[in-house]
Image (cartoon, rainbow, N blue to C red; front, side):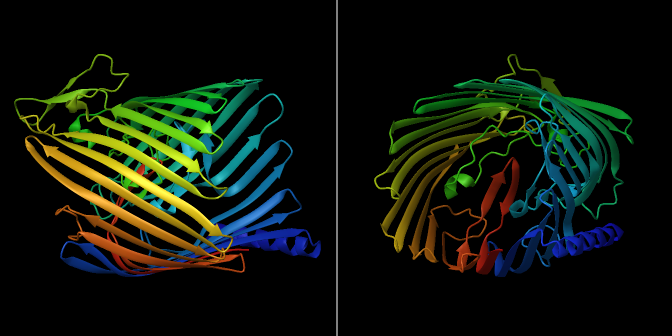
Length: 540
């Protein structure tokens, strides 16, 4: 509260001085979200209402200074925790080779193996820092320094409140096409054990995370390597845990053709099944780390419902992504990914302990079921038959294996998903366009000798009038009898209106299915919802 008052006093002084000089450039955005309805759990319906309003204000002063704040009202929120007040405030200076920011900020060093501070409001995930960030970038090197606190409220898996003090920096040396980089992060953290209401005392940690990275950029070829190591000392346990992560990428871009190979080998906290499923353990990868997931993030709805959650503590895999232009109007896209854990664990005869069986060649993934393999193949064709009209047809196959390590009978569940999405976007005139999207999914879940098959179908129709009004309808159907909502069909409609080029108003009503949604490796189960939603987006 005291920091907020000091910030506002400084901001008012700066604003008053520069308003007189008529050298203030304001920028204001506002998002209002309201929903009223029910969350559905089979035959149980729970009343659910949320009201959220987010206002971001930025004032550019003297061309080099920026002052900003975020006024947030989440009471009650759709996801996450209730908040009313100022959730962001900062003062920023940026001129020539010097950048300085005090207050709340995001940050990314390398590819995030040591530090990646970001926010995803849709998943209620926020690791922004409150502190100071400095960067100096002369011709021959780049140096970044930061220090502050992270108030991480984990509501994705269980509700708890973690706090971290971090200090660190990054040093880069660019040499023509080559760049060498080094990062060092030191952190002290307080990690609750269990949920907020748990009586178990929290654990205090001290962590050190160095990181080395290298990039090479030629005319058609690029290469990137990133390695980090994590030391975590748990004060109460008087133990030290070590882990490491490796990420690599090589890309080739030719005339009408491009291909990228990504590789991950994340071993930040490899543990037996008891430790692996302990979400509150103090030795896991820390929330301010977030390396590349090396897995395609889809835009088609049925494919956004993830089968696989990336485990940064124990996962090895690769991804190949390529495109080929048949002509100036037609492009083929290809993506495949494959991952698994490194080693397997065998349940001992006592039924309570495990023995680790180290796999030869565990630097590459395997299809053996004991290693929880995940495989994905995606192919898409896109053709523009007019300047703004296009047709897209894709096919995707995904397979995920879950192995029951606690059972002596070596049982497993294998889930197969085959999806065919089709999208047609046609512009009839400058006043009207239509988008039609149909997605078909065939799912097979096999448990030992038992197989359950079902079908999902989603149709979306979007009409756009005069670039100001949109009307859409979405219908989804399944043959599954095991959906958490207890339903087999869902339908919803939406109206959108653009007002004066600065405001977008959206109204929706109906029944939404929900599902497991992942972004940047953060996953949350979105619960089924039946009711009314209002969104107003303003940009001034």
